[in-house]
Image (tube, rainbow, N blue to C red):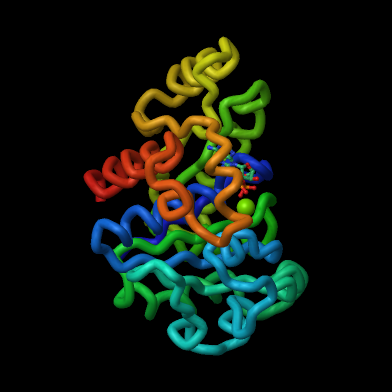
Length: 250
Ligand SMILES: Nc1ncnc2c1ncn2[C@@H]1O[C@H](COP(=O)(O)OP(=O)(O)O)[C@@H](O)[C@H]1O
Ligand SMILES: [Mg+2]
């Protein structure tokens, strides 16, 4: 019964992949899970096998539709999705103009807490009104960190933003942890970045590291999470281990 927001203002670090994969692993383990797609690009929606620009979407929920009515089944038993739509981009303009909009998403998503044990909220790659509303409605934040050269750049400002959100919007928001993604064990750089991230944030980094794995990058075009596209791939195994680590903390 917790909402985990996947947040990092950098694009391409593994937010969507991690949201979809964790939800699939935990659903496979018997939990009820939901992915809420808060990115107008709708990558999570598509990665779960639904068409882009399905309606109703999270946009309709922000406009007042009960969230439960916008939930869709996926091919994976126990995993439902609240789809995104290109219209959501407009929410970045509309939210700041709407009175008392700080907690719009939080109030809209509250009824979903009775529907699932794990809810993953996939944020867009920017700190705009939509992401702030998402962080305002989450219980915990997961931050994917790509094992590449500029990994640490931007992490400091992200953590500052999270501290501000905790102070002004959502005092109960907890930083659950950083997840190192797209790790390439053959490169010195990946090992250096991992060491650096663990040194800077000793207690925050998950033990499990997600390797770079081509099967993971193929899965979305088949509308399947990696765990269903190729359950025996290194990527699927890593996400199963990460899901166990997450569940053990919950
Ligand atoms: N572990 C991985 N190995 C290989 N490719 C990956 C891995 N994780 C993500 N990708 C690919 O990298 C790209 C960015 O990942 P994505 O999850 O969409 O990032 P974000 O949501 O942060 O923008 C996608 O094409 C995705 O398929
Ligand atoms: Mg994404």
